[in-house]
Length: 128
Image (cartoon, rainbow, N blue to C red; front, side, top):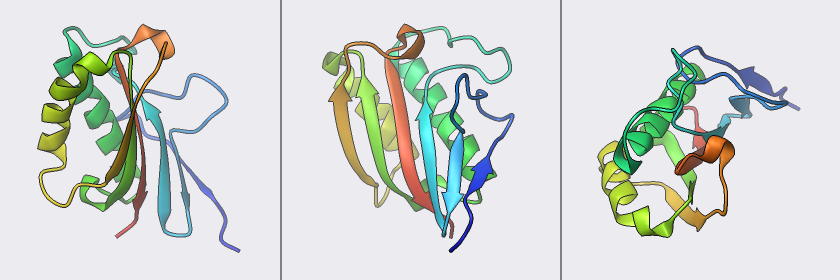
């Protein structure tokens, strides 16, 4: 049985609890939920939902790359939103990162997200 590999990169915010940024196993990468923290400062990015979504996707991209995957190898994402009223704006930014053959996706409104951010995204990808 293949061993799981813990993925860690300085290109995304460090885990702030007992979890890994991602786990790679048997050609799959499971990326923990990314929130809009600037990896250099550890602070929430300035701006609204558009800026937060872009930062989340950049963090997701950095973790995927550290695991040997890419955005175009993402199979499934789950988006957690503080307010589903932000869906259209998030969808617009998300579409820029997944312009063709986008992954399967679920979007959920959550009562509260870590550090009271507006968006969190997790992903499952394969290593190409």
